[in-house]
Length: 196
Image (cartoon, rainbow, N blue to C red; front, side, top):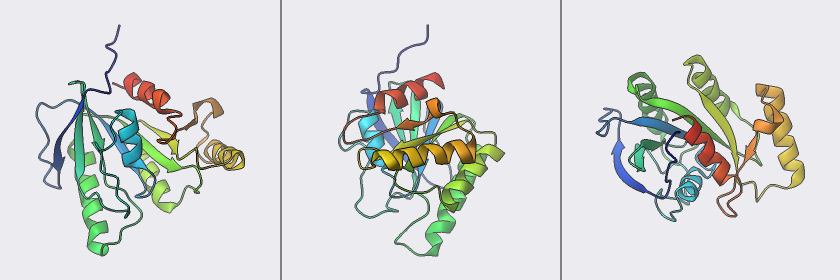
């Protein structure tokens, strides 16, 4: 029987830049991706039952490095920079592209990616580019909705239909999460556990 992961046992290890100075020991990695304002840091904090583990910025585009968090001495949760928006200049976009390209090419321990989508927003071109890249690279991933407490029933139904139509995802596999009321957080933990 597989070990049950204790998501409360977590510590920040290091931030990694384009030089890919990976942490030691090398362990399996679960990557978190999403637009800069999708609530990625909040969901990571909810998963680990920490309020300030991942920095929640009021300004999108704050994270510019890959942040490694060690979970239960078992795997690394890797928080990638948000994509699609930055208050910074165009060099930020170039750095993001270089960072992620290096990561996907050099990390032999990536097991699964979580792509977060705001339930109130359409899947935009930036989301599609990221998803298409994961498909092209044969990286297993799951699309997860955030901020479901802020979306009404109509928005959730529209979001469900969107994923079913665009990516042929079965309705029962569509997950809605909220860092505010905790919905879907345990399901997300189980999804991560199943891919380690």
